[in-house]
Length: 377
Image (cartoon, rainbow, N blue to C red):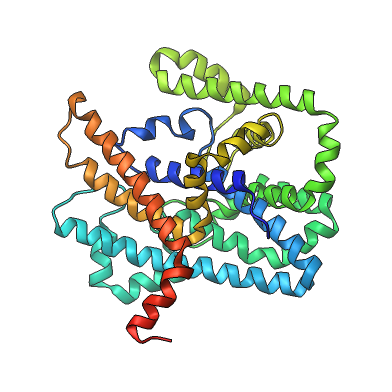
């Protein structure tokens, strides 16, 4: 399938934001997506993932048939599941190594570093059964469940789009009690990322990718009004975030806004976060399409796109770098005079992220040579 540079760039941007957001005392986390909207990089990542599923499914089914598409995504679900297990093992081992080096960190729970040595089989088994989802990898557990349903849900969506979306909305409305039925290691009910809530965003992305050639000509006829509404939603979203950041002095404004939005809950994907990410998608895809295409062609855009094309590999690297960055930040003495050192750590991690992604994307050149040198076939 032909790559869309702006899409790869946005996936890379989402992963960089996820990495920075998971570093509690980092500097650049103060300028990530979550600082300007009620949604964050997790919504962007899931929506883009759904969009790519829709694009890929339609092309595979047209070329090879529905069965081939179903097999493709069953394999993809298995790959994500294996990435969850591998990521959990690496996360625990890397965390243990950092503690051994006396590099404290809070980005992940310290117990994982103990369990991987004290109860290795139990640790791997509970992750494999998804009874436990180590933090920072929670979204992969969500992704496993969503991708695993694709062979059944996407044919339903393509055949009967409106009933399918109606079912998705109905499931979303009852997301919290449904999630509470899932047995889990967490003290709270169900998975942290509620799959019954987040499925609506994922399947909205699939619908965008699968039906874009039919939807966009219709929507473009109403471009002016849709852009006005989308910008208004994003400005309202920004107002909410600013009131949160101001804190107590803005409490009356925050309470007034809450009367309009209701509870804003990331974990079950509330309505405000959902419509805000959809509004942002419209603004990026239509009025800002040319600027984003230009940005994707710049060196900066190409760097982000290379990270985005790394897929599951990039996500696992993102998690490892989050832990490392958190540990490095905690070695820096507190105080405003050291902000530049923390900024340097953030920039170093972004550079390392790109370098690791670039090496992986070029594995077709160096991996066969390495295998040959090691005597492997």
